Amino acid sequence: MRKNEENMTWMDIPYITLTFCLRFYQRVAVPENKVSALRGGLGEMLLRKNCIADRDCEACRFQDNCMVWNAFYTPMRLKLGYVTGKESLGYLIECDNLDTLMDEGHGFVFRLKLFGRNIPLFAQYLDAFWRLGQCGLGKEQAKFEIAAVYTEEEQLLLDDTEIHMEHFRVHTVGEYIRKRKWELSGEQPAQNGDYLVHFLRPLALRKDRIDLKCFDAEAIWRAIHRKIQMMSAFDEIGTELEKPQTWPQIIDARSAETSVRRYSSTHRKGMELSGVRGYVIFEEVPEERLEELLAGELFHIGRNNSFDFGRYVVQRR
Image 1: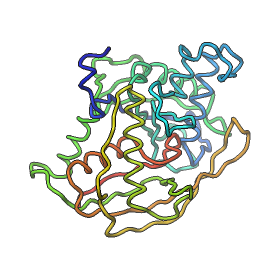
Image 2: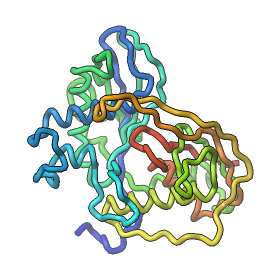
Image 3: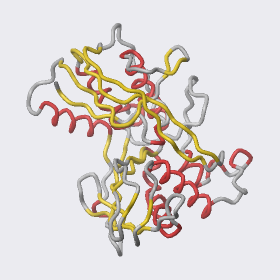
Image 4: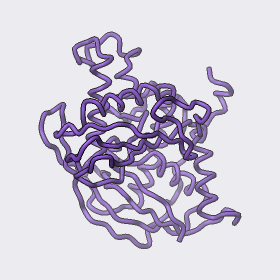
């Protein structure tokens, strides 16, 4: 049992954020949807190095101790009744770069977030991305090197020669929320306020079994609660969030349907993921809801989070 486990809450969920700086060896085409390519490459590298069951994960008797199963598929050990499919919760990949051509000596940056029990596996992720660079990214097999990896404090964790473990620090969700509240309000006392939520990547939600084509306040808040409970279950923390009598309401919004194309190596075909981008402004958000909103900022919400969906940033109005 972890120290003081009986008193732990979702605020105690640990995480780290690592920023990877890639540099390509020659001028080459790269995928526009880099998160899908990076995630697919990560899984392939983990499988090549660790799989002993001919890639038949469902039939493998060693799942509990399998590096691929735990680092890539990251199953929940504390199951929730409403979760029926596979949910990869232990990591997130984020990338803002949409360029499709990289010059020699140039590259792009992406972020890797690790949560809970996946944090001690960080060296496995480093190794997998290093080997992906040797094999190549995407259809053109664009080869790259990892020029550097930085921590959330912008300290150097990995350079050409070594890992600087003295810079490695694990944070908690509670620390993230306190930092973001300070950035939003400074020394001002916590009080109800209006907050703009800008969806940087598509949000894919359903309501009454129908895919939403625009933003819906209740659906967003329920998705935030669901993700907090799922992340708690992943970290084996029992969390029950009390449903408020009323949710903060949307007073302004702008939305547009969008879709992202990706190639599925599992199904060996292209697939289209749909969602909604834009922003919403929530009116009179109490402090408790603000903390949940900021947790969703860290976790992402809705479907297809593995492909960077449901990522947003909160701003004070």
